[in-house]
Amino acid sequence: WCPPEDADSSAMLVQGILNFTVFIKTFIEFPLFGVKNKNMVDNLKPCVFDPIHNKDCPIFTIDYMLNQAENDSTERDLMLRYGGVINIKIHWNCDLDRSIKLCKPEYTFTRLDVPFREKSFSLGYNFRYTSNWKQNEEHFRTLTKAYGLRFIITISGNAGKFNFITLTLNIGSLIGIFGIATFVSDIIVFHASKRAGVYRNYVFEKVQLKTLLDGAKDQSKLHVEKNENQLLNDASNTDI
Image (cartoon, rainbow, N blue to C red; front, side, top):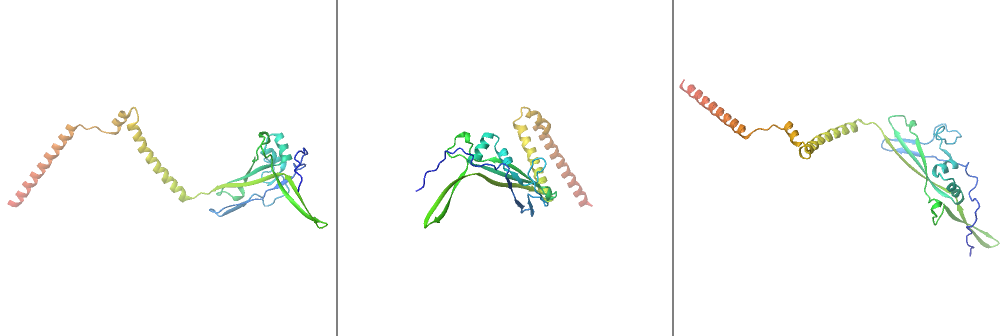
């Protein structure tokens, strides 16, 4: 038998941690390019992250992360009292044509648990753990409900490097796209434009049917005359 939990206490359960620091140590790899990197400088000295003066330091204070994740001071106080969940996003955007040492991560902090102002059924973040011991041949167990801040770290990134073959393929694709664009634009102008007739006059040459027939007759007469001349030449050669 265990007594029920007493959740009516209004004391600040998580106290004096705003100046605590969290050291985030991460490694990344881009297998396509065979490149690896880390979020620490080679000569790492005692430091605290600052978005302006010390962006390379991977050590963050609890106070800084809370302020980045939650703007409301009342909500921050409740997170310190009842716990909360903060997502630390680390994003890498690397230009591998430059030195890998110039590739630096960007840190963002967001809150994942439901704000207390929404009156959720389960507030904050907590978990339970037990302690078991034995005294005077009698077994005891203590069930503790702990409140705290939970940090979830997600890492993402993209990298690029100049490749001549890829550039050639992209240029060929663009040329093909422009050819298709010309064909599509002609169809639109011929059939969807209000001045399609004007455009056709510039593109196509109109020929009357009578002109075509006269031209065909002239061609046939010329062909007959050529045949007669050829026969006369053959006859003269035979007489000789």
